[in-house]
Length: 319
Length: 242
Image (cartoon, rainbow over all chains, first blue to last red; front, side, top):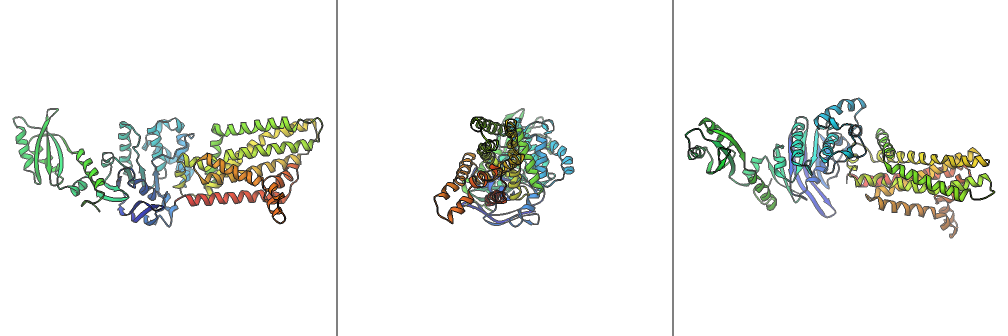
């Protein structure tokens, strides 16, 4: 478990973070979400033992990071915003160097490199000079050095920064796979980029934690209604109104509006008092209708995020 | 000190595969060769030992220049390129980082200095020199180079701008080379203190350059190296994880 207790960071008299307190369970994937200057990087650098907190304690496993930073560093893999790459080195050689710095033996490194190359999809460029690689590949090499020593905690600071849409999807998939073996902290200022990969989000603003929880939790905390988009291909002979009626009968659904048609399906917008996606699916399929899409309205989530950071934690969502 | 060896090997290989290392080596050897030809070999008749001393005088200036050029990038470049994060978040001590980088730069500088060995051999073709003077002279060059590297490394640890590091290293080195002439204007005991602290005149100019090996000169350069590496380590400590 990772525990931060009243952690704060000051640069001179300027407060960059905190005091903040939170806990992260082993195996959890937590996203740090916030606008630029919210304190995300400061928080992650403190966890990575790159910055010493001005006050408070950080415990990784059972080790106090302030008292024993070297022991914590052995257990942490860190990809900063700008990957720490020596551009004149070859990918293999660089990974080996990163492993040796983390006190791995020659045998351990030889055994580990193929696994890292596979996890980061770098096998085909393993003998190339880092300086000749594209931005996407360099970012992967950065992830590779962070996981080389199989750390218990993996910290990724804006790993999708500067990537094109295809590379973003690939990076997201890579993080999904890394979740199996590591506790992962990942930061972003774009909600949709990390909401899919993280079990929990910590929303930061002006150095404070404004909210914490899953997407649904955040939505529920911020407003009593959740907005769900459902695309339904009604069974033969059934009208859109009949489908809307079935949806209205679901408990906690307050409003159903019929939108347009999309690929032969009718799109409904459902307002509810909480998470109803599973129940909606059940009643629709049970009624013989085909469900082509069932999703939380992402625009709504972005609005929640913007509302949170604008409120600066004045809302009920404050932890 | 395992980390020292890891960093040493990476640093040394980066010198050998980057154009910067070869440019510094080429520039130093070119300037040294020109000065040797135009200044040391210009007299019709001179004692071989004097010509050799003149060679070591010019070579010491070139070594100081090369040492500053090599040292200013050691830490500042890591900060500029953000690669310092990899070192800072690894379980290694600051002294290991400083030692690994210093030893790599010192090895590379020694290789450049030794590449000028053909010049004393040219003197030997037309004259008579003793190998002990050559060996002592080269020992002086690498020790002087090591001392300036340590000064440059301290300057490099202070900032992330290589240009600023170069300016600081240059000011420190020139100041230390001017302690002897400054001491001449003072009365004892300050005169003696200033002269003994001088980086070039007493310890190199009157010692190694003339083929004279004094224990105090050896100790002086080792002490300068130790002092500035200690300052560099403390500067790293003050800047890391704060």
